Length: 416
Length: 139
Image (cartoon, rainbow over all chains, first blue to last red; front, side, top):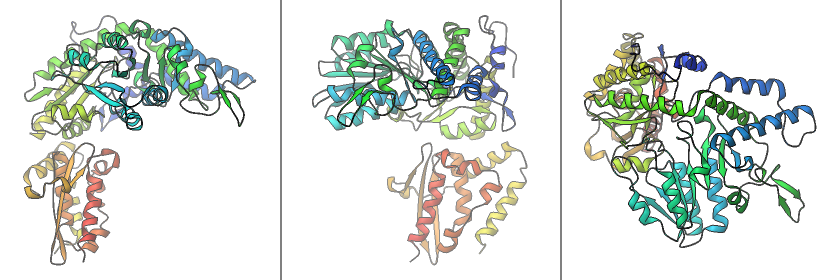
């Protein structure tokens, strides 16, 4: 790999010491040093997160909220501390507005199912965008089929940006909820969600933001955005799998019926009538993923130590550098050229299937994602079978991008 | 007429020449994929398609005496190269032999990863489909 030139070095982040905290980054793949550029699918974990899991299971594994014994108290404290950490990270008004889920998919399904019970009927509309992940399409299709509400899709332009005027026109008094990605997983587009939220509220619609590809790349302030709901997955923000967060305004969450029934979400149970627990427990039926929540808390603490603004700035430099380098390769077309983008570089190579590129990159130790990225309507819009997607995290380096570009050139040469 | 096992062994020997050199091996597969027009365009229909999550595969089968003839194609060249190998092994064999074929050579030549169901390139479904065709065309 090439050495970094002095102008490319980042003055704010010590990438070398950061990389030392991610044990997996020293792995060899197919005999080559791993260049991990599949962060959009899942991120790697710093040792602080791994140690928090080991520590939990080694020293205080216990069920939470109901135990009188010391370990249960300790586990409950750690679990609730993680909730507080997340509350601060997204600047929620109250920790009861932070619901632990198993991931963003569950967060969206929770809102779709619970919201529907009292709020969706024939003639109502649910507005999404043409760049949504399947997880922000299918749950809404399911509730629309059930209720007779209509799923309305706001279009995008060829740069992969929302056509804001069209979205404006689609919003009307029948729009009950708008569900939109903060950042597109397939294109990297950062959507103007604050403006969308303001407009939606003017029509009386609620807004759910899918923040899966945003929270790890930029500061998110749910009060400033004024969104009604915001969800993300823990594993994409350096935390464990099986944990996610659904933020909801206290008043909105109180208005929603529970999603699942079980232990922990009840106040009293008789065969005649059950009364539900207060927030956030009303939405956390059963034993939650305790270790994973604590691990997610550790991940957010780790990000806080580095600083999300420094991360955003550095990743922006990485994306610009990669975009410039890849644009110099003949027959490469970038898919998603929005003005505002975050850490995602999706592309196709003329005459070569993305799958083939991905295979030859893998043989050289470079991990990227190929295919439709669970956003088939986006691929249909561009009339392509899929893309190759390189997605970055703050532990990636300029040297890795150089290596990726050379590996890509080799793949193109072999496959042409 | 060579048996399935004989052809498998022949391919395994050919691939032994590449040793640990992934580049030559994949270049060979890519060349196989490029050089073979392995399906008649008229059979590249929606109903002959096997949808993988990533690459698409088309398969057509017809009877030639007691044996089955296969043609197939894919939009991804590496997938197509591997298809070329599978067709070379299974083409013009009896239905019984096709159904019973273990196809261990894929593992031996170091391409097992392509047959993992999680690869979603259509190859696993394709092999299943080849065997279904063999059963269907038996009588």
